[in-house]
Amino acid sequence: MKLKIQTLALVFIMIATLSACSKKTSIEVNINKDGESKVDIGSEEKKENNKADGEKNLDSQKGKDSKSESNKKENIENKLNAKGSLAGKVICIDPGHGISSSKKQEPMAPDSSIMKPGYVSGAEGKTQTEEELNLEVALKLRDSLSDLGATVYMTRETHETELSNVGRAKFANEKNADMVVRLHADGIDDKSVYGISMLVPSSENLKNSQIVSESKIAGQEVLSQVVKYTQGKGRGVVERSDMTGFNWSEVPVILLEMGFLTNDEEDARLSKDTYQDSIVKGVASGLENYFQSK
Image (cartoon, rainbow, N blue to C red; front, side, top):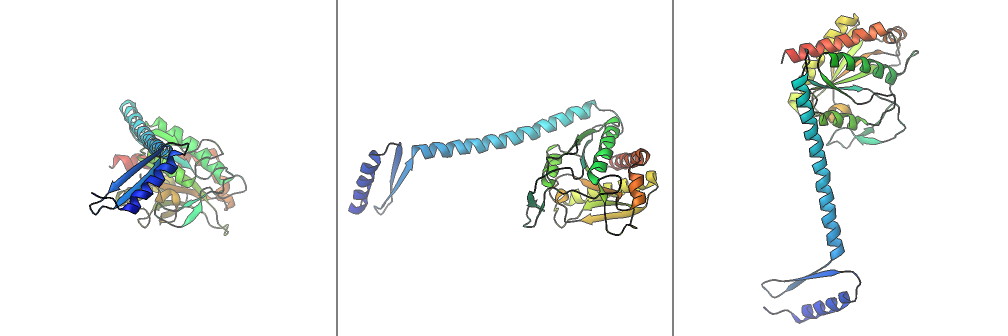
């Protein structure tokens, strides 16, 4: 095949120019059926960098896969060795909020353009802040569920938090949790409002219908038992589509609003060990009933 004269001349000029360069360079000349040529000039260093980037991304994915596989193996071993009514169950406890100076914004859902704060401070009562209450009850719940044979993971065990709302959801996903229990407390301008609520994901932003269904079933059972043990006022189960921690979840998840810190009487009850213990008993009993019914 014949090269067009102009193209051939251009090739020689490029070769001469590149030979004077200090960096290693590769040249590829491709000729089509009409005799037209296409010259591809590429730096060997650039190609090596592209190769290195590809290997780095592959290593990163392998690391994630290895971590997930490690969690699965750990969970299997725990299931084989555990004893108790929750033996073999993996439960992630998420004490809501926590102290952080981060102003990070993150998508409300994986496919959402709505951005929300990744860290928020929570409600506050006369005797305690929400993050303090959430952590105090969560630590008690951790011990209770562990005694029942469950493998328990915590998104935080100190007042400070590193995980954002998306990070908390991903943490539970990586642990392949059978259930995520998020602990919170309410706050509102009307100080006369009180009671215990259960929030669960809706199908608007969480498209996995099985997760939505299982979360609602578990939420109803846990709320029923918490109200039973605390003798508190139940405010029902509410589906929410605007909660980041729900929308990023790949496992069943429930959120217990333990009461209103803005109500002085309920705030005082929530600060007492005996009342907190009743909440823990209710959550544990509800989870037992939920898993036994499956």
